[in-house]
Amino acid sequence: HARCQLAAFDTNLTIPPRGWVMALTRELPDEIALRRAAIVPLGYDPRSHVRWKRYRYTLLLSPVRDPFAEGRTWRLADELALEAMQREAADLLGTRDFRAFRGAADEREDTIRTLTAVRLSRRGPCLDVVVEGDRFMYHMVRIIVGALAAVGRVRPARGALARPLGRGVRRALGVTA
Image 1: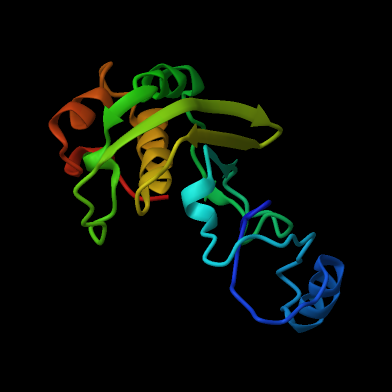
Image 2: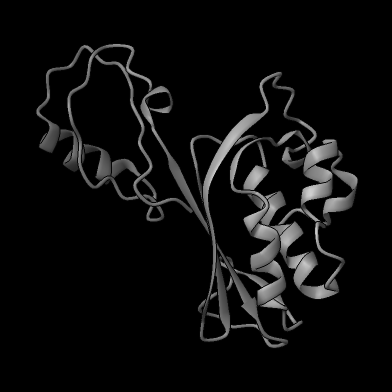
């Protein structure tokens, strides 16, 4: 479900990067492809070196399923109000306290995050929701996408995402995508 995902592990073996790509590729399931490798210092943690992340969720807006999109999209039978969703998405930009947008299992004290982009774009029967930011909490992007879909379906009064954001209350945000 991820492109360009970084991973690291410590080893005492001295295998060149291309050797790691070839050897690990043979052992990985078909759903995972190792594209390249590099030697990094022992203890390197990719999560602490990432400056930004981008998540893309695709919604299939169709009452009929698409076998090519199965398992890779969230299918909604409703047509969504894209303009209302874009207006609400703009309220999420910047540095804010996103505690209302985290999963119940996320117990972090620091809930301040910076979102630099929330873009929605139609692609045939699909709607892509792209969220970029410095870091995310557990289920944060899935909650954002679910909340935006609720806005697109229900068309609530302006501020449907800003109000829970300001109060830190998850209840009003709809389902998790």
